[in-house]
Image 1 (tube, helix red, strand yellow):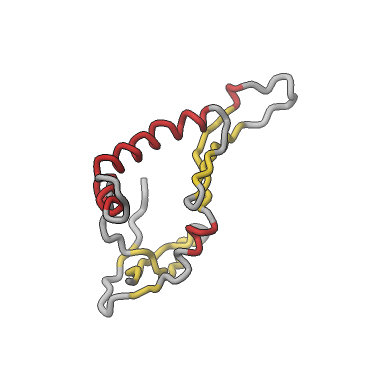
Image 2 (cartoon, rainbow, N blue to C red):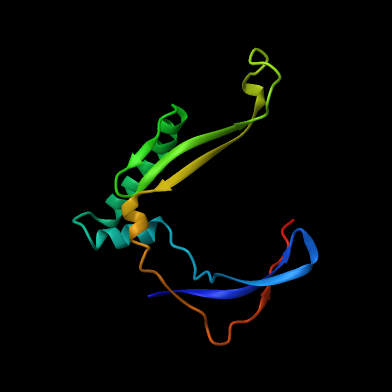
Length: 137
């Protein structure tokens, strides 16, 4: 099974006249919890409803632990943690929670998960339409 790629043209943000071609993943759709539940059901003794319930509960409890400042390690899958960015203050005394600019949830895949993607292959269709990158607003 190969990952399909497509060609896109991008402008260099530092030079309005320079453009280059790049390869990017050709999206082939998406899967949801029901799809994943059915796939896991075929590999276990659980019903799709049982698997879906476990996944739904994971989605509910994961933020609880992250909000407590804990790192969540799902062995064989990866680690979730929170990252906070803030503005700088002139002194430590004036620094408070109002200086927080943003909060992100970070995911670091496990070594096993990374290794499972090492054998990925790529294909470019013979007649790939050339797609200029659409500017984001």
